[in-house]
Image 1 (cartoon, helix red, strand yellow):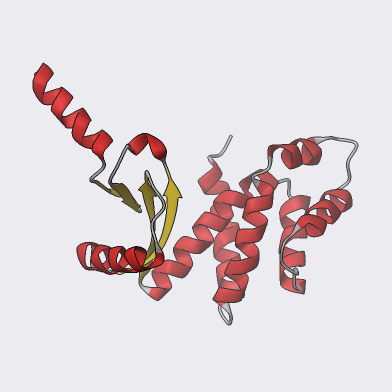
Image 2 (cartoon, rainbow, N blue to C red):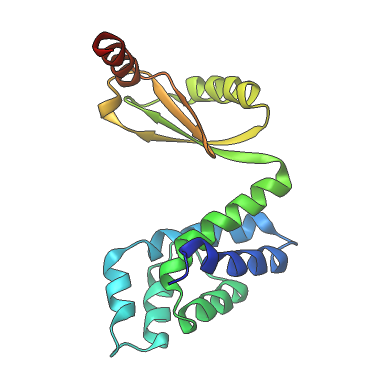
Length: 176
């Protein structure tokens, strides 16, 4: 079976080309569809041979948190009819990467043991933009097992200044 990224690429590229006029609006509903498509119960429902494509579409459109414009409806119908609902999260990731590349930015995920306030997050974002030399779209995810500090992931680059990483480094040094 083809890898998910290979399956998703043509869909993401076609959507990116079709949405060139308003990438930000499309990004909103693509992220909403991504969130829905990641639900395992929906995947099971869609995989049921007794369920029609129209029923799958109606369920997704019914639970979407945003209104789906005609372009979104057409895109969703195409994905469902081609049996690629499971690839929708990867399609959304690749679409976001294409959008970021055009805008000269990247997504950055900050993993933190504790919640980060808005002022501290904006300072951190400015520091990270200098460090990675590009505009970053920063999001925060709580990860209590870090104990303290943060771990930042930008694409395939990782900056880990967590207590957990420091403890691991000390453990390696002591056992070497």
